[in-house]
Length: 271
Image (tube, rainbow, N blue to C red; front, side):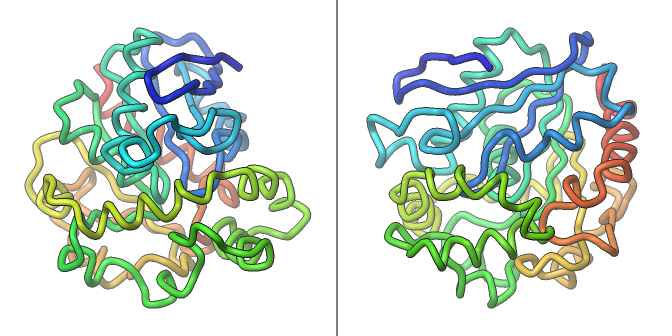
């Protein structure tokens, strides 16, 4: 584990491999970089320099000194960019899960030089309330996603839906979930609903950067009908890549299958 200093605090980073081509992984709301450990163990990724970091206010990273600016999707994208620059990653491929998917798109829209973006558990919508309509299931807004003062019971229920794995497996992520700064949840949600920034849906429909969407069919948060409506030649493979037996985190419960998909995308996009 490495600690990188940035204006908002310290960022905790984990790396594996030393390949010439890098893949940067961005985790979801109230999660941590360790969520990608099962995926990193797959042989398909051994030839890549895999990098993951804890978002500010999450995991082993410090709480943000400026919570209002940092605990936003643009703020998280800035942290990702800082990791890329600090580690000297040249045109990395970015994999974003859930909140990390929105962060990955925001990073691409910022002009950061990337090889491509693959998202999962994240409908490419927002910012603003009208743009958020349709991408998420109503169930999403019943959860403690943006609740600063959520009870431990509510957070544990959220964890069960988020990871979709047996409780003994999910247990390893509970400490990270309970550690997450409450303001990181509430401020991110407030800002995303009010922010007037680049349109993520427009990026998904007509952006030039290689872009892939993986969807787990048992994901309780993402509307599959909305996603399938985005299928077009603009997307890598011209379609949404489905994981029929997976929940919100397909790279956790089907790591081998996800690794094979990621390897194919990387082979097509990384130069």
